[in-house]
Length: 149
Image (cartoon, rainbow, N blue to C red; front, top):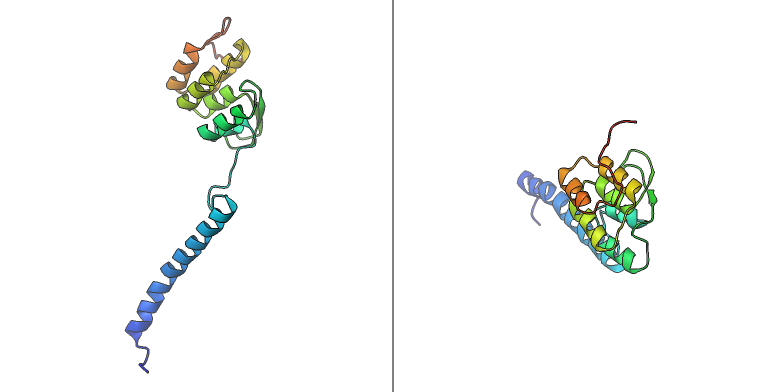
């Protein structure tokens, strides 16, 4: 039997951590495949407004297809858009997330905010592209004045 030399020991010490990491990652992927959950990204939306806040267009479409109202306000957990929990409509969540594609998707899915909701969404976002999408769907009576009250 060969003696363990310093060079062999060094190779073992260098090779063991990456091999163990790879094996752990493979195990996590196998478990994820069996359970249907993602091994890293475990944050799932609870409602349509959260799906929009998370920029998950596929979940938003699925939720609307399952009957969620595209205009109904719902809770959005803290730190997804605002520092605290908030009750937002999906269009307000899209504006807060600064996601013009999500805002357009909501309008394509039938969102029709009234003037007050439109104004809040317009004022939540400081993204020009989101505001342009909102402008193209401005309801009667909605104003762009976002001055502090």
